[in-house]
Image (cartoon, rainbow, N blue to C red; front, side, top):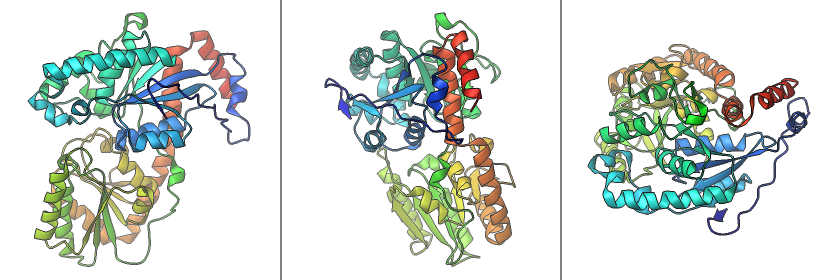
Length: 447
């Protein structure tokens, strides 16, 4: 890892071997273009869902075509993981007052305060200078703060920019001023927009047009459609179990950072109802309070005590072995009380052959096939959630069928290889001339 201002290490291109034993670099030899450098920008190095998705994507790029470079605005686990993956990584520290501003705190002014705006603009100019120095071909931003700062900096540096939107741009998720600002900027800053779900993409449409309407941006690219939904994919090798666990007490878990909108309190209410009929069931809350939400964790622990769950529920805190923990569950719960932008944990549960009970809003609707790969229940409805859990607890064969169907759906629709290929198609469209693009497609078609 390099702190900006010091000499930057150059990542060694990785040889990608295809399933038939041939190298993807053989296809690249069919056209002489050198690999392009793509700068990925994220404001945080905390391993949230978006950052894990970014790490998976960067690890699976075809480096004979695209060499990843990463710029982070704070130090942390993500920087360490990128360095372990051999990715050229840079750190340009942003003021903690900006880094630690939560989305919901913007309602009080947040990033829109005059002093914060001035500080952010000065930082944006520094980022633009670094982008020029790194000699990249494209900038790919990965978070809302990175979209604004990295996107504007890329424009100042004369580089093309992709916004990867992983948050719903809606007033139930962000304050009204932030929604208006993002919908304004999305038509002016990025040359291309990638959304992690159709649900997310629809919320970008400030004018109220159809979901398929284009988001024109950039004079040089014209007004044709420049947007795409690319669901986050998993490295399925992280999940090795072929069927749900057997033996011992039945276990139900929820995975994700501890935040009110993630609905762990609803999970606890449902758990108390389940225990009335299945007193031996055990529950796990897997995750930690990451962004100043420690008070919510205290409330959850107090709630568990009040409900008489203190001996039946385990708070694991942050864990590095989430795939193994999910494989140890009989049922995985997703409990968000507002529409989820995507729902990575739902895909993880399905990949682990674990039946899923998820709330029916946002991305999970695009992931779960109701009654086949899992069960969808109304958001915030603990009774409905408990009913779905009881249905699965009473029918081991149904749990097994749903687990198997879920794993098949992930293999077909939600692999990291599929995600990386679709993102690289965006890069091809932006960076390759039509003639070069056709040559490339013919070259890789042989594999």
